Image (cartoon, rainbow, N blue to C red; front, side):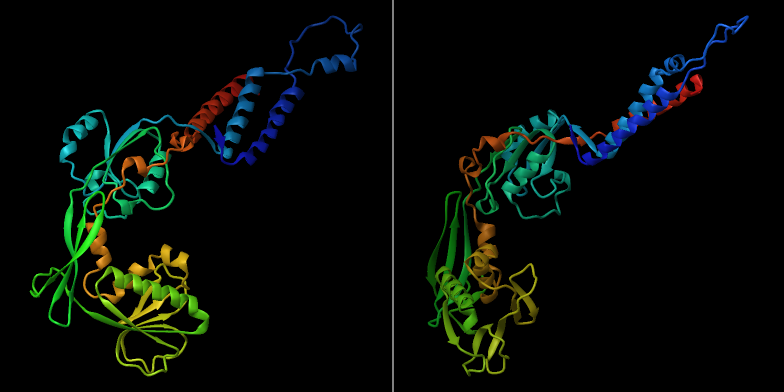
Length: 403
């Protein structure tokens, strides 16, 4: 048992009230007829002996009412015995290999849920979309008061984010390997009319890319990306470290995608330059000399996005940059999504990534985390019912005894 507001236990001092009332009350005695009161003497001792505990049962009921009221105010909670059994399935998983297994679980009383935030019922999951974080969802399942849980998941490697956790003893996690996939990531048009097609290959163990040269402009499924991307980068002295992070991100993008990025490092936005595709500004100078199609400028503010769009062709960098911020915000990928036209390259790669994390590596082996979390249920309904029953009993007995 636990108490959420133990300070209200101080109200137990109220037990002194019914006890004091019963100690000071005297029950009416029998009338005895005497012929003479000559030999009867009133003394203090005899009067004190007449003060005794009256109506023990009534006293007990009134004290019990006070105790129950104190527990109600204190928020008494008791351990709750689990009864429900869940089958939790990740959306998009091929359930055909598990057909007989799922049928047997349903016959045993397992309820079907979706592996997503809030664990909605599987029948209500058609229009439900949410980002998967396996470790976070496993912790949420551990906190629920469930007898048994069976999870069917794909264990996609991008779904493991944060601190590694352990599975509780009542959770059985079963992963299914996804079939290999081949996909086109991008197509780059060279100056000699050659098209380089960037193709990805992904399976449960690895994802890799290769390039294919062709002269057929229709061979690609993706919009053609220009060969060279001109970017003007200007920064004040105080932002030299932010500038280094941006340069490192641009080099990483150039290595990942066969697009040549030409960087023009400027000391001021007032410096004349040729027309560029993008201008990244880490200065307070106005945009009066730069001929650019698109602008990214520093504007530190509270925002969920590190690169937030302000107007058409204009974006804000909402945070100062360092290694930690760049990694936490996935800055390089988000910058690539802005610089490269067409459908999000990061989204294509993420959706097509078939790598999975084996169960032996996915979960912590810490024995301290394997025990199912103790779940407490409020005892208020039971306490309130007991309070009403005792109150009715006390009133009935008090009326009968005229107390």
